[in-house]
Image (cartoon, rainbow, N blue to C red; front, side, top):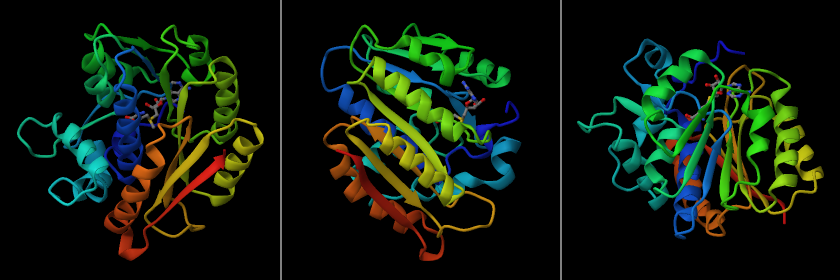
Length: 279
Ligand SMILES: C[S@@+](CC[C@H](N)C(=O)[O-])C[C@H]1O[C@@H](n2cnc3c(N)ncnc32)[C@H](O)[C@@H]1O
């Protein structure tokens, strides 16, 4: 498990979807003065150097944020996300990619709090460097899937939990459902965003069915594909499953996802899904 390094994938189409949705949820929570709490169960290092050998191995960012960097015709949500990523790149060249904790660091206000779980010792060190000095942030070297529910409900009674595993462990598909059910029991009004890959459509459907059966209400799915489903190894699509999203998010995604599917799809094969899994 601890061999996974997200730096290989930083800024790819999956990060574009994940972080575009993340930014919109955090913006929405920030509209009210009342404090909120952000919990990242799989924080990663917070900062990715795109000139590192990891990132350069497959240059996945070229087919993700790289395709958006110079565009001036992006939908508002994408423009917002790219603008925030540009704050991590002083000279204007795409050299760093911010991870989820760093997007949150930019968008949270002084009254808000971040809880960042990360298990990998190397990623913990980088995370300490990028966020350790921030008084709002608590970095926890522990299992976020098992233990983050202990933070809920937060005393602010407002917040977002991002669950973003690598799914290298096949039982992650089951564990995320158990975790969501447990968290939702403790904090039913919270917003939850679960990222999932489409590597095997069968596994993704099983995940959707399990969540549908959970009885959790107000659950929405936003999926972006760059290639048709395939039996060959590799991720062809990914999605964000959001419980209690901002009411504005489905409409925002209706304008954003078709554009991303056209722009990031490989040889015109891009597609998207927007679905209400539970009313
Ligand atoms: C997909 S990456 C996270 C990327 C990050 N959320 C972002 O958007 O920049 C998954 C991270 O979770 C870490 N990890 C794996 N299992 C974990 C667990 N049970 N609890 C906390 N961290 C875990 C891995 O070391 C890896 O850094």
